[in-house]
Image (cartoon, rainbow over all chains, first blue to last red; front, side):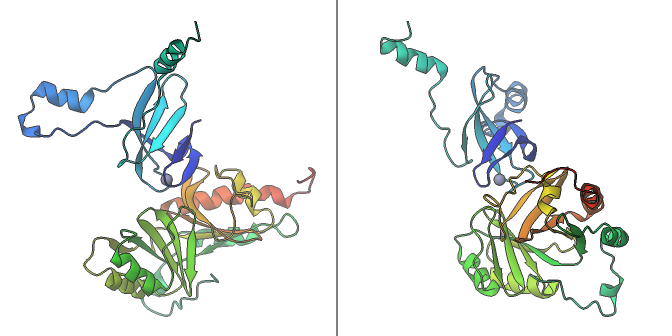
Amino acid sequence: MLLISCPWCGPRDETEYHYGGQAHVPYPETPADLTDEQWAEYVFYRDNPKGHFAERWMHSLGCRRWFNVLRDTVSYDVLAVYRLDEPRPELPTLRDLHQTAEAAGGNR
Amino acid sequence: MAEPTIDAGAGPVALRRSPLAHLAERMRAAAVTGARGVTLTEWPFLTMVNLRVAPASEAAARIEKTLRTPLPRECGRTTTSGPHTVAWLGPDEWLVLSQAESTAVTAELRAALGGDPGSVVDVSANRTTLELSGPAARQVLEKGCPLDLHPRSFAPGRAVSTTVGPVAVLLWQVDDTPTYRLFPRSSFADYLARWLLDAMSEYRGPVNVIEC
Ligand SMILES: [Zn+2]
Protein backbone atom coordinates (compact mmCIF):
# COMPACT_ATOMS: atom_id res chain seq x y z
CA MET A 1 0.00 0.00 0.00
CA LEU A 2 1.36 3.42 -0.97
CA LEU A 3 0.95 6.33 1.40
CA ILE A 4 0.42 9.38 -0.80
CA SER A 5 0.26 12.95 0.48
CA CYS A 6 -2.51 14.87 -1.22
CA PRO A 7 -1.38 18.52 -1.61
CA TRP A 8 -4.59 19.58 0.15
CA CYS A 9 -5.47 16.71 2.53
CA GLY A 10 -2.11 15.32 3.63
CA PRO A 11 -1.11 11.66 3.83
CA ARG A 12 -3.83 9.14 2.93
CA ASP A 13 -3.87 5.51 1.88
CA GLU A 14 -3.54 4.65 -1.79
CA THR A 15 -7.10 3.24 -1.74
CA GLU A 16 -8.48 6.80 -1.54
CA TYR A 17 -6.88 7.70 -4.89
CA HIS A 18 -7.25 6.96 -8.57
CA TYR A 19 -4.31 6.70 -10.94
CA GLY A 20 -4.30 8.98 -13.98
CA GLY A 21 -1.26 7.94 -16.02
CA GLN A 22 1.73 9.99 -17.10
CA ALA A 23 1.78 13.69 -16.21
CA HIS A 24 2.87 16.57 -18.45
CA VAL A 25 1.37 15.21 -21.68
CA PRO A 26 0.20 18.43 -23.36
CA TYR A 27 -2.86 18.52 -25.57
CA PRO A 28 -1.77 19.10 -29.19
CA GLU A 29 -1.66 22.78 -30.08
CA THR A 30 -3.12 22.27 -33.55
CA PRO A 31 -5.20 19.10 -33.26
CA ALA A 32 -6.72 19.54 -36.73
CA ASP A 33 -3.29 19.22 -38.38
CA LEU A 34 -2.30 15.96 -36.71
CA THR A 35 -1.71 12.80 -38.71
CA ASP A 36 -3.20 9.53 -37.48
CA GLU A 37 0.23 8.52 -36.31
CA GLN A 38 0.65 11.72 -34.29
CA TRP A 39 -2.82 11.24 -32.76
CA ALA A 40 -1.96 7.68 -31.82
CA GLU A 41 1.27 8.97 -30.30
CA TYR A 42 -0.65 11.54 -28.22
CA VAL A 43 -3.49 9.27 -27.14
CA PHE A 44 -1.79 5.92 -26.54
CA TYR A 45 1.99 6.23 -26.27
CA ARG A 46 3.48 6.84 -22.85
CA ASP A 47 6.93 6.67 -21.33
CA ASN A 48 7.81 3.63 -19.27
CA PRO A 49 10.93 4.64 -17.40
CA LYS A 50 12.84 2.64 -14.86
CA GLY A 51 13.25 5.20 -12.07
CA HIS A 52 11.62 8.60 -11.61
CA PHE A 53 8.23 8.98 -13.25
CA ALA A 54 5.86 11.96 -13.05
CA GLU A 55 2.26 10.81 -12.99
CA ARG A 56 -1.21 12.08 -12.29
CA TRP A 57 -3.29 10.99 -9.33
CA MET A 58 -6.73 12.02 -8.17
CA HIS A 59 -7.86 12.08 -4.56
CA SER A 60 -11.18 10.58 -5.59
CA LEU A 61 -12.47 9.67 -2.11
CA GLY A 62 -11.18 12.86 -0.48
CA CYS A 63 -11.07 16.33 -2.00
CA ARG A 64 -11.57 15.02 -5.58
CA ARG A 65 -8.64 17.08 -6.92
CA TRP A 66 -6.08 16.03 -9.53
CA PHE A 67 -2.41 16.50 -8.70
CA ASN A 68 1.00 15.16 -9.73
CA VAL A 69 3.22 12.63 -8.04
CA LEU A 70 6.88 11.96 -8.75
CA ARG A 71 7.37 8.26 -8.07
CA ASP A 72 10.27 5.86 -8.40
CA THR A 73 9.02 2.94 -10.49
CA VAL A 74 11.67 0.63 -9.02
CA SER A 75 11.30 1.29 -5.29
CA TYR A 76 7.74 2.70 -5.45
CA ASP A 77 8.96 5.59 -3.29
CA VAL A 78 6.78 8.67 -3.57
CA LEU A 79 9.51 11.29 -4.09
CA ALA A 80 7.43 14.42 -4.44
CA VAL A 81 3.85 15.60 -4.66
CA TYR A 82 2.92 18.83 -6.42
CA ARG A 83 -0.11 20.66 -7.70
CA LEU A 84 -1.06 20.88 -11.36
CA ASP A 85 -0.01 24.54 -11.48
CA GLU A 86 3.44 23.78 -10.06
CA PRO A 87 6.42 22.67 -12.16
CA ARG A 88 7.92 19.22 -11.84
CA PRO A 89 10.42 19.42 -8.96
CA GLU A 90 14.06 18.87 -9.89
CA LEU A 91 15.27 15.83 -8.04
CA PRO A 92 18.67 14.23 -8.47
CA THR A 93 18.41 10.84 -10.17
CA LEU A 94 20.47 7.88 -9.00
CA ARG A 95 22.89 8.45 -11.91
CA ASP A 96 23.32 12.12 -10.89
CA LEU A 97 24.06 11.06 -7.32
CA HIS A 98 26.57 8.52 -8.60
CA GLN A 99 28.31 11.08 -10.81
CA THR A 100 28.43 13.62 -8.00
CA ALA A 101 29.98 11.00 -5.77
CA GLU A 102 32.55 10.15 -8.47
CA ALA A 103 33.40 13.82 -9.02
CA ALA A 104 33.99 14.12 -5.31
CA GLY A 105 36.41 11.24 -5.54
CA GLY A 106 34.31 8.78 -3.59
CA ASN A 107 32.41 5.61 -4.44
CA ARG A 108 35.19 4.03 -6.59
CA MET B 1 -25.62 20.89 16.25
CA ALA B 2 -28.64 19.38 17.96
CA GLU B 3 -31.30 17.11 16.59
CA PRO B 4 -32.86 18.39 13.35
CA THR B 5 -36.09 20.18 14.12
CA ILE B 6 -37.79 20.46 10.73
CA ASP B 7 -41.55 20.05 11.15
CA ALA B 8 -42.77 17.53 8.59
CA GLY B 9 -46.34 18.84 8.63
CA ALA B 10 -48.52 17.86 5.68
CA GLY B 11 -47.90 17.71 1.94
CA PRO B 12 -44.98 16.23 0.01
CA VAL B 13 -42.59 16.70 2.95
CA ALA B 14 -44.68 14.30 5.05
CA LEU B 15 -44.54 11.68 2.29
CA ARG B 16 -40.78 11.42 1.95
CA ARG B 17 -38.96 8.33 3.21
CA SER B 18 -35.42 8.45 4.49
CA PRO B 19 -32.86 6.02 3.01
CA LEU B 20 -32.64 4.17 6.36
CA ALA B 21 -36.27 4.27 7.53
CA HIS B 22 -36.47 0.48 7.07
CA LEU B 23 -33.53 -0.03 9.49
CA ALA B 24 -34.70 2.33 12.25
CA GLU B 25 -35.95 -0.49 14.48
CA ARG B 26 -32.78 -2.58 14.00
CA MET B 27 -30.59 0.41 14.81
CA ARG B 28 -32.58 1.04 18.01
CA ALA B 29 -32.31 -2.60 19.03
CA ALA B 30 -28.54 -2.67 18.39
CA ALA B 31 -27.80 0.01 20.98
CA VAL B 32 -25.18 -1.06 23.51
CA THR B 33 -25.01 0.65 26.91
CA GLY B 34 -22.31 0.85 29.55
CA ALA B 35 -18.57 1.36 29.41
CA ARG B 36 -18.39 -0.23 25.95
CA GLY B 37 -21.59 1.40 24.79
CA VAL B 38 -22.29 2.50 21.25
CA THR B 39 -25.46 3.64 19.48
CA LEU B 40 -26.39 4.19 15.86
CA THR B 41 -29.09 6.62 14.77
CA GLU B 42 -30.18 8.18 11.50
CA TRP B 43 -30.92 11.91 11.38
CA PRO B 44 -32.84 12.07 8.13
CA PHE B 45 -33.51 15.06 5.86
CA LEU B 46 -30.76 17.30 7.14
CA THR B 47 -30.26 20.29 4.85
CA MET B 48 -27.06 20.02 2.80
CA VAL B 49 -25.95 22.57 0.25
CA ASN B 50 -22.89 22.10 -1.93
CA LEU B 51 -21.01 25.33 -2.41
CA ARG B 52 -18.25 26.06 -4.90
CA VAL B 53 -16.60 29.46 -5.11
CA ALA B 54 -13.05 30.83 -5.35
CA PRO B 55 -11.94 31.24 -1.72
CA ALA B 56 -10.29 34.64 -2.25
CA SER B 57 -13.20 36.18 -4.16
CA GLU B 58 -15.68 38.85 -3.17
CA ALA B 59 -18.44 36.29 -3.66
CA ALA B 60 -16.85 34.13 -0.96
CA ALA B 61 -16.82 37.12 1.37
CA ARG B 62 -20.52 37.78 0.68
CA ILE B 63 -21.31 34.11 1.36
CA GLU B 64 -19.38 34.24 4.63
CA LYS B 65 -21.41 37.28 5.63
CA THR B 66 -24.64 35.46 4.80
CA LEU B 67 -23.57 32.39 6.79
CA ARG B 68 -22.15 34.58 9.59
CA THR B 69 -19.07 32.37 9.69
CA PRO B 70 -15.87 32.09 7.65
CA LEU B 71 -15.54 29.24 5.15
CA PRO B 72 -12.90 26.83 6.51
CA ARG B 73 -9.73 27.07 4.41
CA GLU B 74 -8.06 23.82 5.43
CA CYS B 75 -8.82 20.14 5.04
CA GLY B 76 -10.60 18.78 8.13
CA ARG B 77 -11.81 22.13 9.43
CA THR B 78 -15.42 23.07 10.11
CA THR B 79 -16.99 26.36 11.11
CA THR B 80 -20.33 26.75 12.85
CA SER B 81 -22.78 29.59 13.22
CA GLY B 82 -26.37 29.26 14.42
CA PRO B 83 -28.07 26.46 12.47
CA HIS B 84 -25.21 26.13 9.94
CA THR B 85 -22.01 24.10 10.00
CA VAL B 86 -19.67 24.40 7.03
CA ALA B 87 -17.37 21.47 6.23
CA TRP B 88 -14.34 21.70 3.94
CA LEU B 89 -14.63 19.41 0.90
CA GLY B 90 -11.90 20.84 -1.31
CA PRO B 91 -9.85 24.02 -1.87
CA ASP B 92 -12.88 25.69 -3.50
CA GLU B 93 -15.69 23.44 -2.33
CA TRP B 94 -17.73 23.19 0.88
CA LEU B 95 -20.75 21.39 2.25
CA VAL B 96 -23.12 23.58 4.25
CA LEU B 97 -25.00 21.43 6.77
CA SER B 98 -27.96 23.16 8.28
CA GLN B 99 -31.02 22.70 10.45
CA ALA B 100 -32.72 25.48 8.53
CA GLU B 101 -35.07 24.70 5.66
CA SER B 102 -33.15 23.72 2.50
CA THR B 103 -34.83 25.89 -0.13
CA ALA B 104 -34.39 28.98 2.07
CA VAL B 105 -30.68 28.26 2.74
CA THR B 106 -30.05 27.56 -0.95
CA ALA B 107 -31.83 30.74 -2.05
CA GLU B 108 -29.89 32.87 0.44
CA LEU B 109 -26.53 31.45 -0.64
CA ARG B 110 -27.41 31.72 -4.31
CA ALA B 111 -28.32 35.38 -3.82
CA ALA B 112 -24.98 35.94 -2.08
CA LEU B 113 -23.10 34.28 -4.95
CA GLY B 114 -24.96 36.47 -7.43
CA GLY B 115 -23.66 36.28 -10.99
CA ASP B 116 -20.11 35.42 -9.97
CA PRO B 117 -18.40 32.16 -10.95
CA GLY B 118 -19.35 29.33 -8.60
CA SER B 119 -22.30 27.16 -7.72
CA VAL B 120 -24.82 26.61 -4.96
CA VAL B 121 -26.72 23.33 -5.21
CA ASP B 122 -29.22 21.82 -2.79
CA VAL B 123 -27.87 18.28 -2.32
CA SER B 124 -29.93 17.37 0.75
CA ALA B 125 -31.16 14.17 -0.90
CA ASN B 126 -27.65 13.17 -1.97
CA ARG B 127 -26.61 11.90 1.45
CA THR B 128 -28.14 10.89 4.73
CA THR B 129 -26.77 11.33 8.23
CA LEU B 130 -25.77 8.49 10.55
CA GLU B 131 -24.78 9.26 14.10
CA LEU B 132 -22.48 6.81 15.85
CA SER B 133 -21.96 7.60 19.51
CA GLY B 134 -20.61 6.07 22.70
CA PRO B 135 -17.35 5.06 24.39
CA ALA B 136 -16.83 2.27 21.82
CA ALA B 137 -17.68 4.40 18.76
CA ARG B 138 -14.06 5.04 17.80
CA GLN B 139 -13.21 1.34 18.01
CA VAL B 140 -16.17 0.54 15.77
CA LEU B 141 -14.96 3.00 13.12
CA GLU B 142 -11.36 1.88 13.42
CA LYS B 143 -12.37 -1.52 12.08
CA GLY B 144 -12.73 0.00 8.64
CA CYS B 145 -11.51 3.60 8.48
CA PRO B 146 -7.95 4.30 7.24
CA LEU B 147 -7.73 7.61 9.13
CA ASP B 148 -6.02 7.99 12.49
CA LEU B 149 -8.98 8.75 14.74
CA HIS B 150 -6.95 8.94 17.95
CA PRO B 151 -7.58 12.21 19.83
CA ARG B 152 -4.01 13.32 19.09
CA SER B 153 -4.90 13.69 15.41
CA PHE B 154 -8.71 13.81 15.22
CA ALA B 155 -10.99 15.77 17.51
CA PRO B 156 -14.44 17.35 17.83
CA GLY B 157 -15.03 19.90 15.10
CA ARG B 158 -13.04 18.02 12.49
CA ALA B 159 -14.67 16.65 9.35
CA VAL B 160 -12.95 14.82 6.48
CA SER B 161 -13.93 12.89 3.38
CA THR B 162 -12.71 9.32 3.69
CA THR B 163 -13.97 5.74 3.67
CA VAL B 164 -15.61 3.53 6.28
CA GLY B 165 -15.51 -0.03 5.10
CA PRO B 166 -15.71 0.37 1.32
CA VAL B 167 -18.13 3.31 1.53
CA ALA B 168 -17.09 6.90 0.84
CA VAL B 169 -18.31 9.18 3.63
CA LEU B 170 -17.85 12.61 5.06
CA LEU B 171 -16.86 11.84 8.66
CA TRP B 172 -17.43 14.55 11.26
CA GLN B 173 -16.58 14.23 14.94
CA VAL B 174 -19.07 16.19 17.01
CA ASP B 175 -18.00 15.68 20.64
CA ASP B 176 -15.72 13.83 23.04
CA THR B 177 -18.13 10.96 23.85
CA PRO B 178 -17.03 10.37 21.06
CA THR B 179 -19.92 11.12 18.73
CA TYR B 180 -19.37 10.92 14.98
CA ARG B 181 -21.68 11.88 12.15
CA LEU B 182 -21.23 9.94 8.93
CA PHE B 183 -22.59 11.23 5.64
CA PRO B 184 -22.78 8.43 3.05
CA ARG B 185 -24.49 8.78 -0.33
CA SER B 186 -28.11 7.68 0.08
CA SER B 187 -27.68 4.61 -2.12
CA PHE B 188 -24.77 3.40 0.06
CA ALA B 189 -26.49 4.16 3.37
CA ASP B 190 -28.15 0.76 3.71
CA TYR B 191 -24.84 -1.05 3.24
CA LEU B 192 -22.99 1.26 5.61
CA ALA B 193 -25.66 0.99 8.33
CA ARG B 194 -25.57 -2.82 8.15
CA TRP B 195 -21.75 -2.73 8.18
CA LEU B 196 -21.84 -0.58 11.34
CA LEU B 197 -24.50 -2.74 13.02
CA ASP B 198 -22.28 -5.76 12.42
CA ALA B 199 -19.20 -3.93 13.73
CA MET B 200 -21.13 -2.85 16.86
CA SER B 201 -22.41 -6.28 17.75
CA GLU B 202 -19.28 -7.53 19.54
CA TYR B 203 -19.58 -4.81 22.20
CA ARG B 204 -22.77 -6.42 23.53
CA GLY B 205 -20.80 -9.46 24.61
CA PRO B 206 -18.81 -9.96 27.82
CA VAL B 207 -15.43 -8.26 28.09
CA ASN B 208 -12.74 -10.91 27.82
CA VAL B 209 -9.83 -8.77 26.72
CA ILE B 210 -8.21 -5.91 28.60
CA GLU B 211 -8.93 -2.64 26.86
CA CYS B 212 -6.27 -0.04 26.59
ZN1 LIG C 1 -7.16 15.50 -1.15
